[in-house]
Length: 157
Image 1: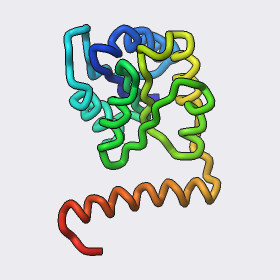
Image 2 (image 1 turned 90 degrees about the horizontal axis):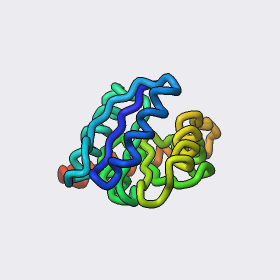
Image 3 (image 1 turned 90 degrees about the vertical axis):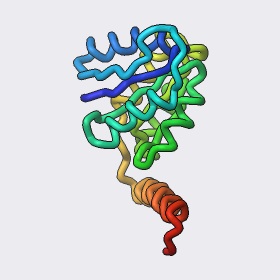
């Protein structure tokens, strides 16, 4: 699987071990930074990570910041991205199975490496469940994005 990963300076200490895990598991990883603890703006990194996912250059994305909240907000601003903030394995697989999530956000201040390992594993192993209710809900999310874009452009339905 091709994974696009990034985070801010607060997520930097956890991002490196996650990248090493991903490589050990056989995934192809593209790291969009931060590359040290010097402050960076997580929206810039989210734009790079999510852009790669959106263009189909990566199968999934992972964002790591201090709490994961800012990364989640930034990622969800990008059309076609469904990002979930997950700090437990149940949410990590269910967000993919029920909501077709394509970006995982985690907080380096919130979980340690062992929990991150399990969360990432469950996120990557999960597959979208084509149950009609889940398909319908994900389609409604896509329609919400389209409607918001039309409103921003001043277009009528």
